[in-house]
Image (cartoon, rainbow, N blue to C red; front, side, top):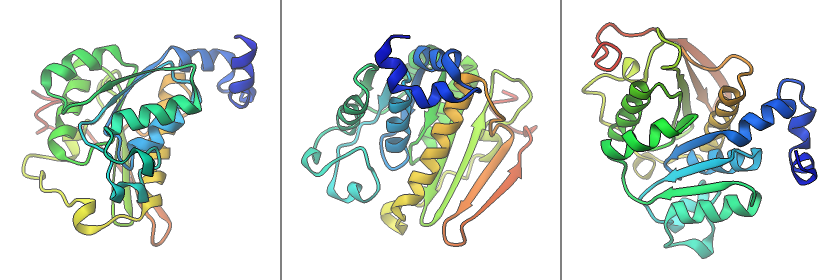
Length: 247
């Protein structure tokens, strides 16, 4: 590693679980972040700071003033800009050594078929079930790990899907047809730091998968209650009725 990289990633290099070998894996990785809102912002910034060599940001939305309470990659002077462009600027200011690609429209099946196989990990940070289902299906089809998160009001949830390790549950094992009705933050509100908590966990899980350290959240749904500051865990099993796992 060159001297600049040694200094930049020195706190990773000091960790015996990561070290130079793990940092090289991070720098060689390509991560797709779907959604650059409350979850995607901390995910993008922490992965950029960690030195993920290639990041692809996918979002069709623009920055609004109401986003700034929680979407920490965006700033007041970038209101009206595409969220992908805003997040890219913020992340490159943190780490100019990485490459960032942007997709500035909603991802369809063709987009996902092209993007997902190129990636080491996909991080799902959108706020709607159709996108979550489509990303899950693409990751399962192409054998790419998926890190999923969601948050509303004071609550968050996180899970990991590992199609590269057969037998585990996917996102559709948890949510079936008919579960697509979803409340939005605009309707019910969200405490800003809650999405930060979930996004940080997503970033941790992504780096663990890339470096092959620790035990990831595959087969587990972690629930966070910000009002009581409690964390709970539900064990998940592959559903025999899942249209993706058994399709």
